[in-house]
Image 1 (cartoon, rainbow, N blue to C red):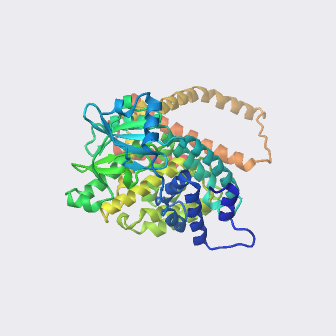
Image 2 (image 1 turned 135 degrees about the vertical axis):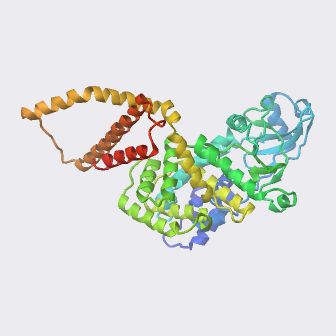
Length: 510
């Protein structure tokens, strides 16, 4: 096993040592393999064509193999006995001691219940939690040192470790995984295109999950799928629609859609396995993401940059320079049709833009990009003409229409709070204006300024003024519509467009 010092010696060349990029990435892969399963998994998570690392590094990491020998029959049986207090013979009618799958976190055995149902029993490797937590501490130390190196700082090593830590600790929590499976199974119960394995809760706990066994063909085995008469184009489309719904509508998505976790069942149904790695996007990020995609679809530089700021939660360092790069990005891709654009090329270019402008990306957004990138590869293996961007934009526009649907607006707590605030503002505004005018008339109105941070303060005031102005205009139109029963019912589409245009002009002139 390598020590942290030896690892750094391998990765970071000394003052006299040097080697090219390719050799550096080869060394990195070899080090990860020697360090053990948690490190291999870390590399694998980054290797699945996320478009967020240099192409040479991604290619090298894709060679990583999870060379983990399965635990023995006695060790697996001991995990079951320690957690249930019963033997495999007592719990199951039959239990195959030879696992059908083995990885760094767990291995899977086939078994039959006393009722005759065939199940898959996922058993966590003994002691893996302690090993991984120790590895995470070392990863953090190494990430700190890597940020001090100009060779590795651009890879944002701390951020990558954050993403990995979040995902792997969640994978270790088998009770959380059971919750994910149950929730998704309920939500997709009526969906005829997706199948989630049922959880047998009485035979599941912190270290073991017993699931309905889904027998199908791996989604990557296109030859077998064609021979069996499956509709590959339909499967690709249904798979993307299912994930877009998870990401954009629920904000809660299965974040590990590699081919090994996707099966095709009779009727062109997709079975999704392994819910250990999940992603979550809040309403704010989902809305910003939709607006960002629409901005791309309309070649709207201002909209794209505005929502990049919203997604990272702070202003960019040099907005003009970022807008210039985004305009170039649009020029390079805007002339192409969706079917001619490689999504992974778009993500790769986006990665370079993120690094150049020192933008921060939410770990869950990283997982989302990784998931979509994986799905793009799966979709193209099923249908070479498949391009996810052809589906993303109409999906985003549909979600935006739903977001401003009158019934959703009426049920919105934010809207109710806005109306209450506008009512209070309308009540107090006349007296506030009168008080200010009296002070001006009596020469009592004074403006105090400070040189320190004046520009920042002025900018914040302008932003606040714009938001207040927009809120007043929006609330006025909305209130009139609500109280006269004209809103969305009798107000013509032309009038609504004119009202929106007037609000936009009013805000931009503030």
